[in-house]
Image 1 (cartoon, rainbow, N blue to C red):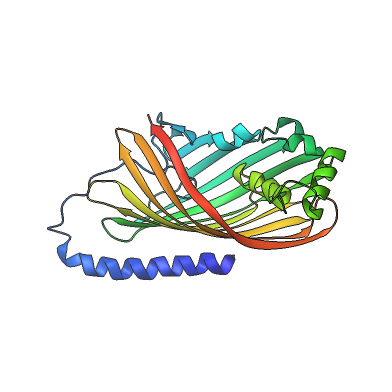
Image 2 (cartoon, rainbow, N blue to C red):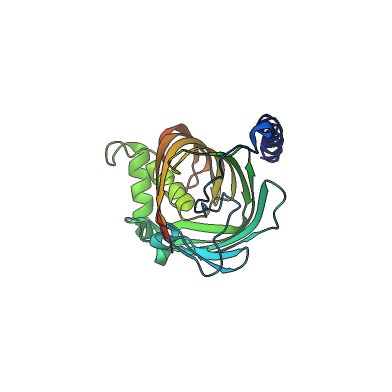
Amino acid sequence: MRQLVTFSFLLGTILSQNARAENAAVTATAPQKIQRSPIPDEWTATVVPPGTMVLGSLAEVGVWDGVMVGTDPAAVALGAKTAQIKWQLPNFSEDDWSLGIKYISMSRKSMWWGDMSQRFTKLEAKIVRPSIAWSNRISQRLIIHSFWASGFGKSTSELSPYGKDKLHAAKHGSGKSGDGHSFANRTMQMQSIAGFTEDRFQLTAEWERNSGDRILLSSRLERTRLAQLETFSMRLTLSQQWSGYGFNLRVGAGPEYSVISGKDLDSEDISASGWLPAADLALYWIL
């Protein structure tokens, strides 16, 4: 993970030096860049100004210059309590840096995803995840965002008799068709959506079109653990973001390869991998 972060920083530096050298001769005659609303996702280094609110798939507010606090609506909808803060460091030429920290907690009683709460007698997790983001302007329209986060904390789980029956049925063919390892996979996906991903590295290229809308190509590596069960996933998504009058809509998709291994929730060894569809969706207003 650290080698990937180092490589991305080196790659961004090399690209920026080449692009700036090529653009130096035309800087004087280049049209003034239109200022667009910042992308306030945690994987960018930008924050919204003080008093500005972001509502939708993001819920954040600028509290003072360079500082933004908020929560994760998707995680809250699943029953996880989240709180996060992002601090943008002073500008360094064409680079923006920010530091962030996110706190997430969840218990079995707070879960809203299907019958997941019924499948456990004990399920609890508390994670603190610091992060760092670097946004580097390569040219007038191209920005590279690098993001790295690592979580600290623990999670505990214990299946209920109902959960054991469901898991046994899935493994031994007496459950619903196609269930397979879906119970373990759904549990890990829920953890990821709720913000429990322990380690994440993301590299995103943001290209601004003439219209001011954006195209984003994003690669992401992440690791999630629940008790002795662990997943590692790699995904690549291509997205289009439309912006106007504070309204932002991003829609994208791509492939994801996921590996799940370790001890399953009934203490049996498990090893499974495969391709899954991945989505990149965001809908919010900057007010």
